[in-house]
Image (cartoon, rainbow, N blue to C red):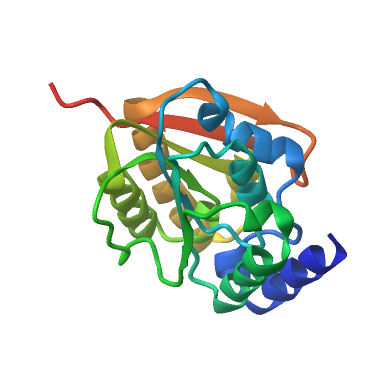
Length: 212
């Protein structure tokens, strides 16, 4: 656990824009992020985007069924290497025979089949509105009809940043609000509040419309 927190803090200092937090997600946030995967279901294809050091990954692995498939897309090479080490050395990770780490951005990731669940740990609040829209479209494009996308954001973080930021940053956050709120109004099915996390977070659950 100490090594995981140290690696996360080290990458936060080096690459704040794409790391977004100083510590890994808590187990309570991980449970909320995987609530849909934990529900009764059949075999599933699962994609985790931005797994970092594997805090949510560990929870997903404990929920995997025999015929499930898990893909992890991680842009940060250091995090990807850390995950590979865990698949080699960590008993929980070693139990997953159908899991693979891909080092790339989700906007360039290609899959031979759609996913039933996409779980994202990307720090949307750090990105430009057009890039977030590109990321969301990419993830929705990888979902099967009726598939579910889950992501988290820190409670009221965008609103608080608007108060203390200059005009350029406020404009960016306003554009980001428009993109995220638009996706939520069209696709959100539920939201969880996780107070036992640093910082406290909302977990957003979205669903891709089934093809008529």
